[in-house]
Image (cartoon, rainbow, N blue to C red; front, side, top):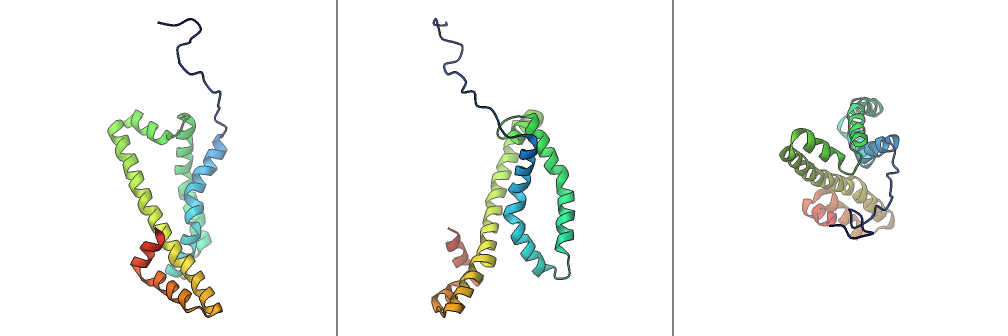
Length: 160
C-alpha cells in the first residue's frame, strides 16, 4: 500500500559513493599488518638472529605476503562493501564457517594487540624511561623502567 508521493523505501539514498580505489585498498591492507609491527619485528630480529640479514628477510616476507594481499584486495573489489572477507566466506562456504572465521580473527587480534603492547612497553617505553632516569639521576624512573622490563604484573598494569 503506497501513499502518494512515497516511494518503496522510507529513506532516500544519501548518494555517498565509495571513494577508495583498488590500489589504495591494497596499500591499506598492507599497511594494516606491516607498519604497526615492522619496527618491533625488525628490532627483535636483530637480537634473536644476530647474524641474519633483516633486509633480505623483509624482502622475502614481502614476496611471500604479496599473493595474499592481492587476493584480499580482489575479494574487496569484488564484494564492494565493508567486511568483504566475511561476506565472501559466508556466501561461498556457509554462515557457520564465516562466523567461526571472524570469531577466530577477533580472538587473534586481541592476542596480537596484547603482544604488540607488551613488546612496545618492553622495547620502547621502558628503555626510554631508563635513559631519562639515568640522565636525570631520577631513581623513580629507573625503578619504574626496571620493573617494566622484568615484572609481568607491571607490564600488564601499564598496558591497561
